[in-house]
Length: 233
Length: 233
DNA sequence: TTAAGTTAGTGTAAAATTAACACGAACAAA
DNA sequence: TTTGTTCGTGTTAATTTTACACTAACTTAA
Image 1 (tube, rainbow over the protein chains, first blue to last red):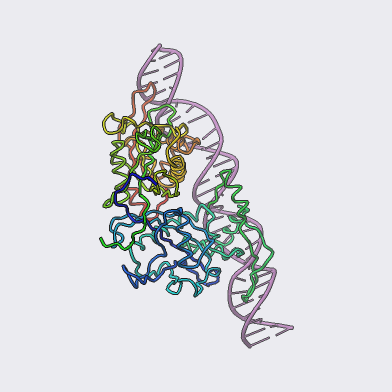
Image 2: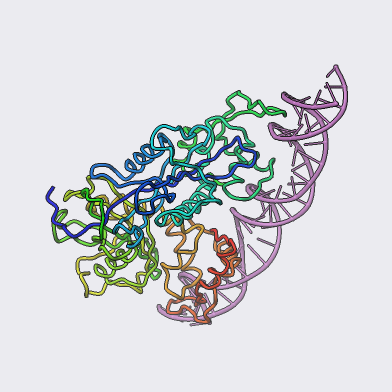
């Protein structure tokens, strides 16, 4: 590598805001996974999982790697959010962080005691503890992005199990957007997109009428997307 | 600075996609400002203006600084776009680039022969030359972002002069979104937001009826924005 | 086995928004 | 003063969105 540029360089990190949703809860909340730091700076404080980018990996790969290393979570939806670069955001020295957002279903990805995850915990986004670095700002930015995105792209399904009921889907949107939807109008609209497939299964186990299960037709969505299809809630 | 992290670090750069619009043209096009590189790599090729982030400046500041240094443009709308980090995107060695988008009005910011700008030129986005690095991808990403953003946030005004006519505004949206609008419906909608102020001036000089001039009421927009106001085109 | 409690699933009508559409007014140039 | 061009303006039909309530299905407890 013959690189003429020799000036001091900022360290480059990635951090992940992991949104988790538990469709089995009666009044679910969006949650975020935090890690308790066991080294300085901010030792003992909660922080987002993250770490430094290695020289031979893409940013996406770095984010996925850190996610897996620190939480055991892998093969989930993840996308770049924003890059934070205030000169004083890390007391150790200049560090620029590329933040990512991941979406997981809490039932599928419960924290196993393995990995480093013994110091990891989910917090409802309205009850976050004090966070290290500028991670409060990162989470705030992530929430705004999720709220914006969920309305015109069908990413919400990433927060549900593969098979879900329409009530669960509605609850998800109500939780993220902090508003309510009329049940019949919601179903009419979702139905109109033709992006859900009945699996034939039913959600049983509660003392009331069982609900049909659906899955998201991602193939159909990708096909429609190419021809300028607009999802909108 | 006592920084324990000593691993090799990627170089960190910023690059700017500058969108320019010329409302005086009969059939205006969105344009992007490119710089002809006079050093290797990609010597003689066109590239986006940009450069390395210094250790004591924010990313936003770095982008604004490079914009000014390389094009003479300053005090314009600029926002972070996306961070590009493919390991091989720079043949000199690992370089991660935080891309920015700037919006300018071409009449206001014509390229003065001063600065480094003798090798700078505007290209319609549909007639871009071959670009260095991954800058083609950067521009593509920027266009997608602009098209998305312009529909639900009033950023388009940044591309017009302070005072503009409704026809110019309509032409701007038609150019960016590559579609047409019905004149009366367009005006009705814009009018409905109450975000334009008649300046009293008229756009004259063409051999036809003069048009009223307006300016964007950014104070009012900011006030409304706080209360969850939605602009949508 | 029956009653009580809870969520699932469904249609219609009113209101609001969006889309389609045409012509006289104003100005400069010939 | 005629011609050419853009400015500025309302109404109607179509579509989309909103509001709203009851029966079906299932479990649990009496």
